[in-house]
Length: 218
Image 1 (cartoon, rainbow, N blue to C red):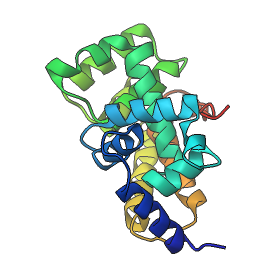
Image 2 (tube, rainbow, N blue to C red):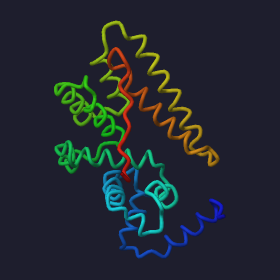
Image 3 (cartoon, one colour):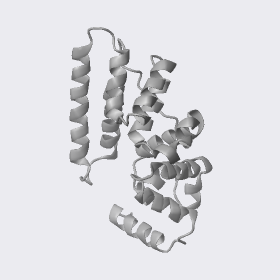
């Protein structure tokens, strides 16, 4: 049985010998440039998942491909593909303005995607959030606070404060363990789900329903 180190060495060798113009190599390059242009990365990942291209490259699942070859977690891949679908299909007006306004942060688009699915998010509130995001340049966490304030019942300030403090603790823990290679994959998933929960909770009398994303391989 190969160790993770041996597997990484094999994958590195394969990557080094890929055609620079191949789709597979372009996707790897997009992964390296992920933070500066998540849209391109999200587009590539969406194609890989929908067409099951990872099978041609010797991987048994989309999750295995993400983990071994481009080295991102499945949760991150789903976040990217959901955001890409949102700005190209669900809210194309957002994507159409990228050239003029620049590409917004992934967390901003991810929050808008989730907010729109919430029953308490009226069209008026959603338009306000979009304006705050793209006209005022507010970040994902700032938008989350804005949304909670817009939808929270009277007298819930103390609850909101607890949620914000909890979110801060989770974010700090995520940063602490990022460099630890021996942390189980499930820990990262749990922390990401906790971060999302605290970011979106408290918008009404009860926390927002915990959403499950459609499996890309289904």
